[in-house]
Length: 389
Image (cartoon, rainbow, N blue to C red):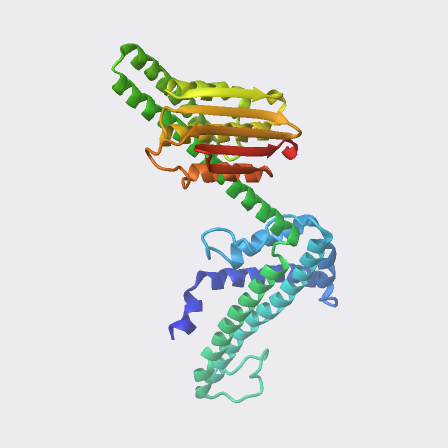
């Protein structure tokens, strides 16, 4: 019983009913103009449907009246945008024709089925039936009152069936075109890529700052040298400020979806990473070959993050050990190599998310990165093509 009575209490039943009756107002106006051509609105629907804005208007009506509150947000299967192609325009024309046909059926049922109920009640009384409907030739009888609710039940069934039908037609004819689906998919992919990039940014920047701070603090406590402690605190302060700047930039991007990413560090600023590592006690031997300043922005920025994560792993897993950094720009490639001796104190740093991030960054640029032990040392080697940009 609840299954049959459910449509009577569902708000969507009545919003769909309203949607089905709206075209009848237009048809009624035309019938006042010319009763002899009731089919004219079907003809007028063709040029109207070819207007790009008509698809937007029909899509908004369908979202508001055919699927109100079903998902708490507009139904993504129904497009609410102007027609972008001729295929969309012709689908809108077909939609208008289908909507008019459903409207005719619903309007007829809305007018005549309640009239039938009234006729049944009149026939069951002494007043007799009206002269306008089915019972003009029948004799009055009391048992017709038992049939009076039947037309109203049929009306509800017609409204529910037509509502389901027009909603299915809307999702088919007003649904997103292939171009719109591809655009939505590309936007979603861009959002996911941006989120992954921001996650890597936070991991590299904040992870590096925390690692430097921990190593510096530990070294200062162990050294018990006021001068060294002062240098360590200065290095912690500088690294913390850089991390706060990175964090503020990333949070600004998250708060404002249209905000520019701002200037991210490039390999031209690699010296601050090397000095930060030296300040943590590591003996850094660096060598730069080739025009690093000519490296394209995307490659240079990712190269900076790869170098940052490599130095962070050295400090985190091996401590203050000698580090050799080689940056080479030659033959259309950027070669980055960071090596340090394996101390065996904290284990091999081969399973962390940082090393996975290094490989992911290289792969996204069309390059490759290798990480692992090599000839008694831990080595990170990344090759990035310069023509990626």
